[in-house]
Length: 264
Image 1 (cartoon, rainbow, N blue to C red):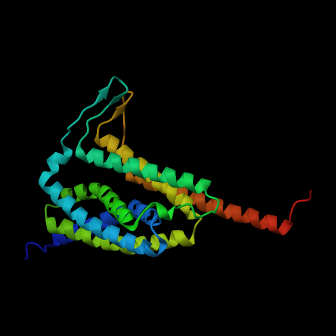
Image 2 (image 1 turned 45 degrees about the vertical axis):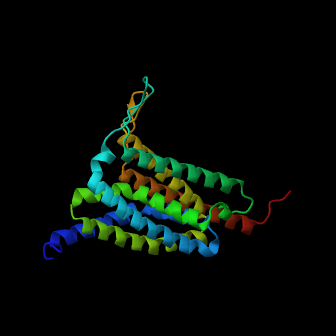
């Protein structure tokens, strides 16, 4: 027992929980948007059940990766199309590429639906997903988002219990934060547009990461993964631009209201 609860293991556990929390921002955003497809009175349940099921799937994935990591990293297909395309696909790269493509598709569809909707802020079609389907989508995408953090955890420690506890605790934290993020977006409709474009950026980041893992070359140029620092820097810039634009818009509206309608 003393060999298990060592200072090294406890420090590693704290690091893994912090890592899961930092990497979980994009996951929280997806959970918030996906849960809005369910009936309003069931959305909180969808978020909790989705993350809860994802915790079990993450631990199962962790067990599989620990015992078969070579199978996830071993290339099984190397398609080539002249000088236009070449790649070397493994299970890891396909999971990341599939998740990225799905998120990009989801973000574009929601943005298009928002632009075509007559009622601002009511762009999510809540009838398009059942409770079970929303829970399943949140769980599966949660696994996609967690794949890299699981590989990072394996690099930090070989203690299965440390990784499993970190997954459970970070999942509980995500359940708490998911409701708060959803409530914030519900009360601040203006940030939904920003959230959708950040979600689109998340999908692009996953696509570049998957392309890098698959060693994809397009017209002789390698696909490079977007770094996390670049991702967060772009998000900060987007938030600053959105805040500045909204304040400027309020200033213009105030000026128009004090001057009254223009003549003619």
